Image (cartoon, rainbow, N blue to C red; front, top):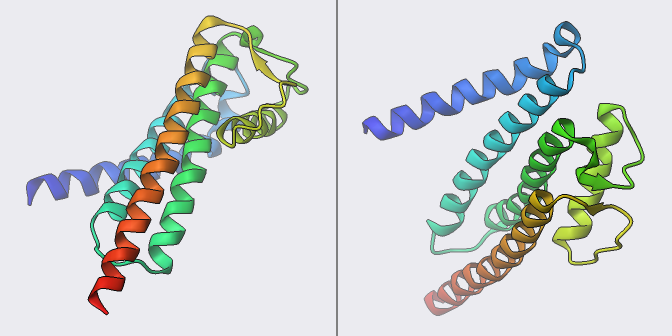
Length: 168
């Protein structure tokens, strides 16, 4: 019971901080260190939500619209996690990714979402590419994790569907 309360407390604190960080942006400006800090926090924040979604997907033995929408949300959360992780590296050193089109935070974010989406879907246009070894490793790991998530997700959904058919 205590672990559940601690988890709820951590979730509430994360929600409050997630709300307050963008609100504090006018006070701190768009300094690279502050933007990198925000990016790291959101990477952790979305990681916690992703873990909760995985726990939700594994629990029930049935399949319904909630399971399908949670599976899709997990996919989008993977994109957001890598967006904010890469953004933290980018704000630390803008040369870690080549051909970034913007310098404003909104433009950087949109470029990161585009790059992460192209990576997670294995399209890989190559117009934006990692130039530093650290970002190459992170993008490679992200590609493997996203494919693993897709495979495990299909397995979970098929097993739930099969179990639901066996009950009929």
